[in-house]
Image (cartoon, rainbow, N blue to C red; front, top):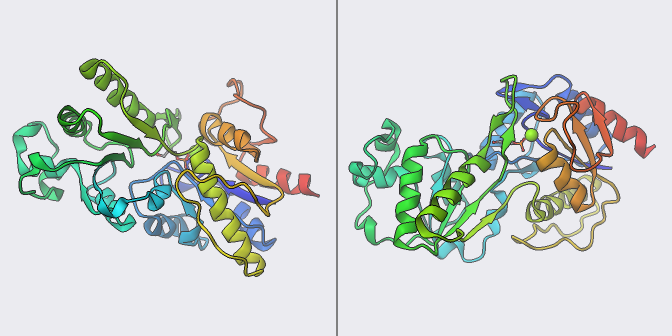
Length: 321
Ligand code: G3P
Ligand code: MG
């Protein structure tokens, strides 16, 4: 068995661990069962995410076990020559993620505000703190707009994206996830990054009378599962010590052959984790600690349902005999 759990609503809520989460991962560790963490979260580097989770869960988590919504963009062809506008996340951390992935030039909406504050007079003060003045910014061609995480200054982001799309309506937008809802410590699910896609696409249609040129990544897309599958195969090779070749899937590449016999995708969100895992051919485990509530209509039947990740892992181990 191999395990691929999501994070928010499964292991963590807000910044607190969900009871039993560390025990469940330790159980897998002790049995040498490969596991990775696949989240639709983003806006920080995989290294920072691994460090943060290690301290929250009090269990060592390797950077190679982290697949965030935008991680597959590491393998975007031609990225070194591209100028991208990155949206979302705190301060300028998303710019750093884009730079870390090797994009040629990475702009953030704050750069547009810093260069000309009247572009959106209601900007947050962080724009002036983290933006950079860019020479002849109006002439810079954006190859891709990359939405890495939920906007922290939606007004600025919407205005800057609209300006870029006004200049070149064919500009490609990549949304790193499409979550309508996600779970934090609030007692009801919260709106996710899918709502931002809804804003941008609706606005574009109204302004241009046609559909936006866009791609959606993250769970439940096959792109996300193929990428995570390749990372899980690598993990399995490392743990078993068989020394097979390690290879990360290219963006959009299908994994057609796998040494993994039974993979469980454990998640709290039926519309993301469970349907994505099910469509991909994985077993699925649904927890009651996040988005899903008893009585919600399910898009497919999960292999197991449990109160929390520990219960689901225990049931899955039992199924395996
Ligand atoms: O922003 C995070 C959220 O969309 C979901 O994350 O870990 O539940 O896939 P996760
Ligand atoms: Mg979740």
